Image (spheres, rainbow over the protein chains, first blue to last red):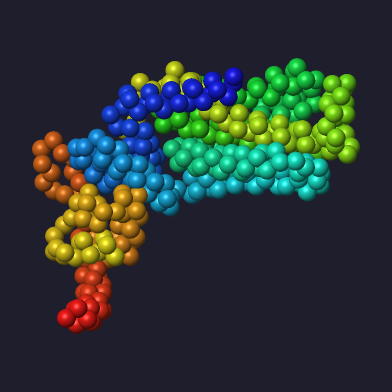
Length: 286
Length: 91
């Protein structure tokens, strides 16, 4: 239900943006990038926007804007902070990848059956999507991205630790808690400056930060802390056919953390978008 | 190559980005990185137009530099033998 609701909110937000703005999403992002870039990059985006304005056909304009956005994203940024911040996402992505590989190698039973390959494809796809979304968010406002990443990290990691260490009912609550954090980040970021691009950057980077950090926190807690035991878990283990209880817990938590990686990204994005729409956007991005 | 060829068709004139897009049939996502590289290499020069039509934004214009003209000329001369050979083969 949460996944479907999150997908619906994101879809409605995107469709709403496309309908409400004659510009389209790509042109809006291009304008936001223009505002936050400097030097030669800003001049090139200005050239693209001027050309975009001179095209009459709405469909051609949108196609043109999409291409320009792609070109602008590929253009090397002169801002060292943005570059560093875009590179910063490599560290949590690599950490998540290493943690997953440790589980797959050290506990071979995790790779039993056919489901694990499906999880692996989903995991790699989610990591790639996180990288792209963070890249765009950091480009929109590098300062916002840094603030959001630093602010949400302690709460998300604490929440993941509590989710792994708690009884099942409160564990679910702790696991879902980070989904609301991007909304809080948007509200904090736009407290003084209600600009749409800062709100968008906070929503995008907030969603990526909570999903990646939750995965890292959850899997690291699984590996480093003593294995919890309760009657329900022992019953599940008995039915699983796993060689030992520890292996079963690692397999269960790895698959659960993978699902949460995708779920928190979508639910976090949805909560961030709702907050951004409610909070920011009377002012047009210039 | 396609972008240089399109500009070299009228080497002394200034060209709009969208005009180049139509003549080369490239997508904007491919053409702008090419324009950026050509300008960085000093083969193209760019400027904002002075006399934009009323109601239209001022657009960016592109033209070959001296080095760009030399490169296009050398490319065209190196292509000539191929064209001649093709023409001989056809007759």
